[in-house]
Amino acid sequence: MAVGITTCLGFVSCFKDEPLNAECDIEQAYIHAGDKLNSWFLFDSDTLQYVQSDQNKIEFTMSAMADLTQIAPLFRLTPGATISPANGSVHDFSKGSVKYTVTSEDGQWSRIYFVSIRKMLYFGSEHEFNFENCYEDKGYYHWQEPWKDANGNTTKEAIWATGNPGYKISNSSTPAENYPTAPIDEGYEGKGVKLSTCRTSGLADMVQKPIAAGNLFIGQFDPSNALQDAMSATKFGRPFSFNTQPKTFTGYYKYKAGEKFTDQYMHVLEQKDYGTIYAVFYDNHNAKGEAVVLYGNNVQTSEQVVALARLDNIDNTPEWTPFTLNFIYRKAVDMQKLKAGGYSLAIVCSSSTNGAEFMGAVGSTLWVDKFKITCE
Image (cartoon, rainbow, N blue to C red; front, top):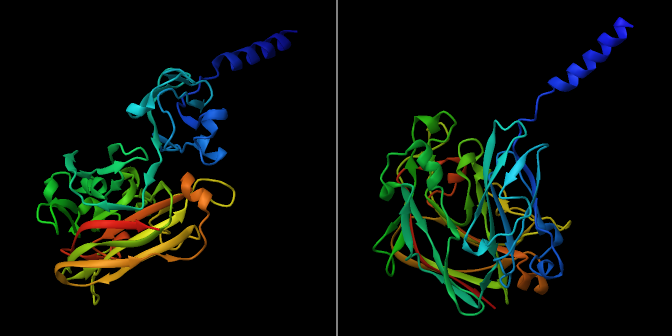
């Protein structure tokens, strides 16, 4: 009898002493798509976001006609965790991202997430990128693009990204004008952009990233991955709503190659550096209807690529020089998907063609201005 009581008490103690969960993560974020909301998403799968453990920014994309003023995201949390504002509460996402705080079951840990919803941008018969709108923040420069929607209203859109946030990790005291990507006042017409291959620092040397090529691209850059997995830090392209497909890519450039081409260990190679400019048009959903983004290791080679316009091996070019590139199509375009935002466009520039592998010549500089994409 005493043994039975002892055993019973042991079970009670086991249940009583079980610790509360210390996890405080969002595992999934989703928007319940009713009849109206469903028309604002390209695929049903776009209403659901799987959130990685190292991710604190969650972004949905809706059509250009979506009303973002009363959206109620829902979240699946780690067991026992709570979220504030409340799960399923209505918010106005037209004013920017909404901050959510997740608290663990034991109350000892919390984590902040930012949830945003962006509208699909409408791409007319042509769009010119003049690089006149730049500003300094967090120690380096950013660019915004004036954009007219289908109703003729103009907004400033942060479609351009650079590797500047990654450079800051190892070179935080560098003045903004000396970062790999910086504005210039003397572009081909008005302001332009200067992309320079720069030496990093001892911190970056430890992970075989001794140089940083100046780059500018339509997409997003995640600095949290810059030193560990630089290829996945660059997310290329943005979905647009097109009436007709891209045909030509034009613009102006100058280039000066650096003197010594080096590898990831700063070994000098008998090789010359070149700049690169290209535009990629790709299908942003795979055969299963899952959203696709291209990264540094597949932006030109992925089977999702529909068309490519590329200026190869840009050599020393001291004066502003025009270029005209035709998009070379690899597959047919679905016109319904084209209008619904089923295709993404990326424009990519780098002062060193092999900069993504941290190979190039310090001092290589590419100047760019007045890009234009024409559709028909």
